[in-house]
Figure 1: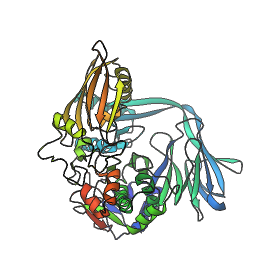
Figure 2: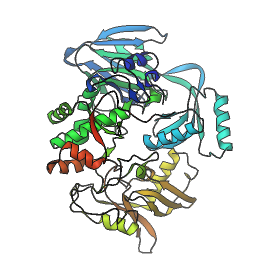
Figure 3: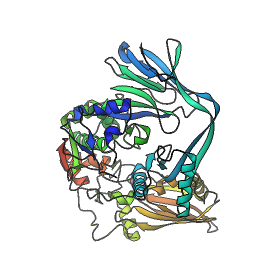
Figure 4: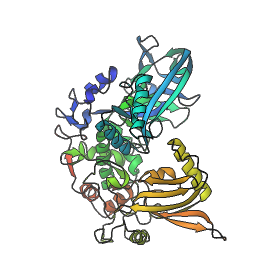
Length: 537
């Protein structure tokens, strides 16, 4: 893993140097004592700004607050302005001659977790890579290493010769480039980098396409890896949690469920600071990370949970746990490898999501198809019983399923993307928690095998990978549809948010709830000894 202090050159490096009152992270370990209040994190709150036409951001200080704008103009000169409000837009600026935009895509994934595992496998082969998210998660040959067309084509040909058929170049000749501009008091300025610093109050951001939010800390507009811009919120960790906890667990969650969510959200944030390294910030504000609404919609209950758990994180052998969670497990949690590729996490394992002994997984593994169907037929006694996504039956015609799959394969540039019709689908392998590991799809052009969480990416009906398929026939006994019969919503790994509601109502403490969903993990105050994530060479 790269030293995090050197992750951000220039202005970003200066910001990171102050994260922990001048300590740094080496191998994922803090080198000096730290309390949670010291940590400032970088959240991309408007990603890929400028990708769509006529997007604007109206920004203003709240309660008449003054904003200081620090920016570098098109000539690289730093300037400073003060204002109460202004607007930002991105326009296409014509180039004297078209410019080549190109990246070598090594793999394509639905989730960061599997993309990171793929990146590690490429690194083991001696290839320098970076994880990106232009839409889906991708692994690119590192741009500042393979920086010329000749180097990229040499690497592409070398990989194809060795049998890597799915790698490809994305190339485009651009006649113009996006240019961020902002307007203050009728005067327009170009800005390749723009820092927005309030005097004392939060900053309001009103996108032309999206909801108005208010953010603590300060903001910066900066280029990303895709030729557009990202609006990044630099915010103290505990302030960040105020914009996460009430929206993830719900403002009316029982107190101990909110405390459990807060500890997990704090742990998740610190464990995942590397997600957007390629874009020069750390976390996103949507479900690819954690939902973050800034200071819009804070709640007194969530604020109390944050205050009462200040600085507490969940660890396993003195390393932050991979603090994954979902809304509804469907009655059984999944292990990490049931959903993603990568090293197993010992504290993420299959657990029957009930305070009672309803099912013995050691005697009746849900890898067995009939046992799985029997399990899905059970509805009572679980932590999530009565929730509308605990059990579901969703049907779709062959035509709509074929369209779903065509769109998915087209995004992945898969050779079977030109098929016309699905002829049959069948689950061929399940994990011990019942999650689908492989799904075979017979099309008119050939057979396709989908693995793990890609099943959810490929089709609209399933709300999780915890389901079985029931074929539906017409009067002529021709296959016309499939029913997806299953349970849960999301990946099902780690804590069930609705499950924590039930356990808290039964009187379980936050410690006991987390011990149930993350067996073997320990709650600790954040200090200099704790490893944030495993080091990668």
